[in-house]
Amino acid sequence: MIPKKGMIKVSDVWERIIHWWLAATCLLLIVTGLGMMFHSFNFLAAPVGGLKNLKLIHNFTGLLFIPALFFAVLTWWKEAGIFKFPEDLEWVKVAGGYLWHVDNPPETGRYNPGQKAFFLAVAGFGGLMVISGLIMWFPLSLPRILVAWMYPLHAMGLLVIFPFFFIHLYLGTIGVPGSAPAIFTGYVTRSWCEKQCPKWLKEKEKEGTLEVFGEEKKAAHGGHH
Ligand code: HEM
Image: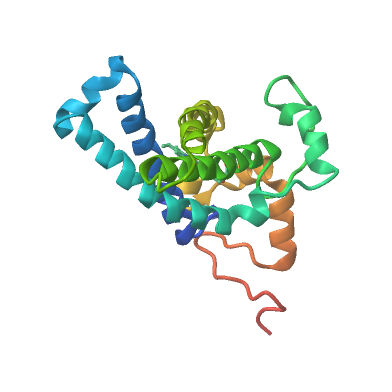
């Protein structure tokens, strides 16, 4: 997957590192968590020498998940954490044109409300997983009833994040073809961008900050004389 001339840069190296750090820790947490939760998944403990080790891996991966989540929220909050009106509401009304045919789906910013919902679910429920996980691991001398509540809350968080992950995986690969390069090389085709983030594309072009593969970076003001 080497970018071709004319492709458009939609993510920088920092965003891609954060994405894969978050994704890797999140997936490992899901797999190790399921391995502990259900008898039918207990076999996942065999390669690591038993459930005790699986739990250790889960807990320490949780610690690595914390900075990933923190940086993800810092990095994407502005573009994926805040709904913009009216375009986002208009997009929701037609489900972005994903579920039934829509001639011209409303143009949204860099991330559409579906992606914003996923980001917010990861941020909110990810935060819940961190807090509830830490309290279960280190109950200190917190009230017993509070500690007891962390178990169902932790399980509930999984029920939100897990299905969202499949939707994300599907849309990021086969659902919206051409998306995956955004998170591997950082460059997508212009036609992908015109469909997925037309408003962002127009703004970047107007500002003169769009980075195109194989073309010299244009100065934000003026250019050459
Ligand atoms: C393992 C398979 C995964 C693939 C193929 C994948 C693919 C992608 C792609 C293509 C984008 C960019 C979309 C765009 O620029 O429009 C993206 C963004 C993002 N991904 Fe993933 N991803 C994966 C796993 C994960 C996991 C496990 C998480 C979270 C725990 C995650 C969280 C995010 C977030 C927060 C964004 C920012 C934009 C948004 O909310 O959609 N990804 N991913």
